[in-house]
Length: 409
Ligand code: HEM
Image (cartoon, rainbow, N blue to C red; front, side, top):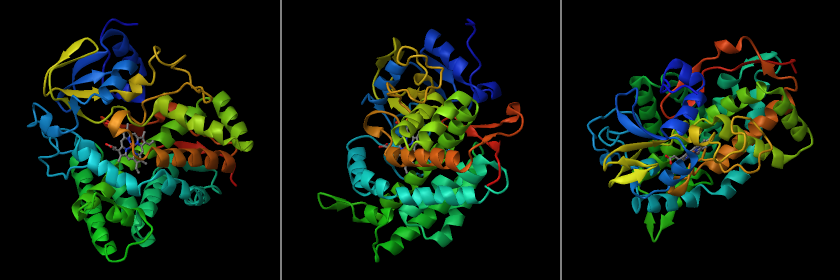
């Protein structure tokens, strides 16, 4: 392995960051790095350090703890967002506020609600495949992975069907302009305004949907304010959208590149082996997950991480994708093994900020895999793999398009 530090965040890095992560894990597992935005942060790449950091109460989620809060960048989830007037939500607050909000939202967003939603997600996935099955080719991102989570979360929240196209449009603005602030900010503004109004309307006519559940939720007689409920609905959309698009996109690419594993999964799907499909969805997340880095954390006091001194106010970024390939934790970490059972990856985070939407993400991933493999039995990549283009944000990593071919239905 080269002794030179690898190039981080360049175009080659986005297409395949894993060699650079291997170098970091081996040579500088906790490294002070200047990010493309110019903000320096500690990058944590080993599994054991990553897991510890994610659950360390001395690492705050509150951007005000950043010692250089003036590095405002205006994007949601990174330092300075409070200055951009963003309402507190689960990913930018600490206990006890976090504990209260998470308890309230957990009453509404329950695993039971998600499980009951399974037939609807299957129906959505089938409807999307209906849209292109007769054609013999498709872009799996634009026509499947992108709309599935948007429609799913809109349905679950209780956004009326006639308004869901607006969400598809705004979500598209977020995805296609990511990295450019104006488009994302405009899309965020539209979504938040719409959700605020929907919550206001629903207050008088509560139903079975998730927004009604958020309005109903109470803790010791305390309810979410309308503004808090709107912020919560928004964070569910925001946290659950691009992540799921990229899990399906990256996951399908990994499978289509590996005929042996693809055949294994096909056989499991044909045999109705749901346990194997669930294992496969976890392994695809470990192997090439959508969330490159966990969201920002800031040291509230001086501490030692992987032998390095972290000063109070320093930002810390846990590289989930690097932790998932750590040979100290996973056997043959660079091999895709869909049947892997010892697979405690950190793809959904760890500790009090563990992904609230994991049951929904898992349901969508399993349904997507099953539907695509059943409906399109000879699915394969179309065109030249070297032409694949990646959308590399700092936190998220996914394909711009995934062209595929198959025998028309
Ligand atoms: C938190 C991953 C889908 C809602 C997180 C975190 C990760 C993550 C790594 C922790 C971030 C941190 O500690 O900095 C993923 C992945 C997904 C996914 C890989 C899909 C493949 C979803 C979905 C929803 C959702 C579908 C909701 C509909 C949330 C929320 C949090 C969160 C609300 C914040 C929880 C808290 O701070 O208490 N997710 N997520 N996620 N996720 Fe997900």
